Amino acid sequence: MYEKTVKYVPFKKRFWDKAMLIVVLMGIQAIILGIVAIVTQTWFLLAPTVLIAIGGGVNAYIFWKRMRYFLQRIKISDEQIVYVDLYYKDAPRQLTIPLHTFAVKFRYSGGKDRKTVLSLFDGNHLLVKQYNYGEWSTSSMGEAFRTIKQIKNEELSPREERMLKGKGLFF
Image (cartoon, rainbow, N blue to C red; front, top):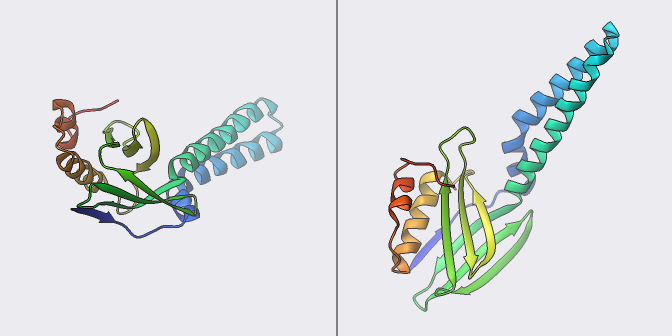
């Protein structure tokens, strides 16, 4: 009936692909500011150094949290069963969910953080949040969302329609 499979990407690669630039830049800033503070003995510069280092750590945590799950496959069979293959970090999990309890949500933000999230649920229980990465682009997540809604015979709301066209922010 429907199947979407993407190539698996290891957790460390997913994490560093997303976090490398900001974490490294903030680390370099903290080191340079720390060296300037020590060399010039301008000790009040150590406070911003610590704040930059904390900011780098917070950003690393945010990217770790976003990249820890990876959705490799969604398959909906003719028997109305949904098969989900996902990874938590690098540990594989295979889930089987009846189609009538399976739900999908799609969120697109064209704002400053520009993130897209495809969330899968079993009833009200969140199974996975897949953020845009690699083959899971905004358009491929939107296509999966639209197809699953059609299979379940669920109408797209006007808000979802605008979001899929990239014409609105959805939170």
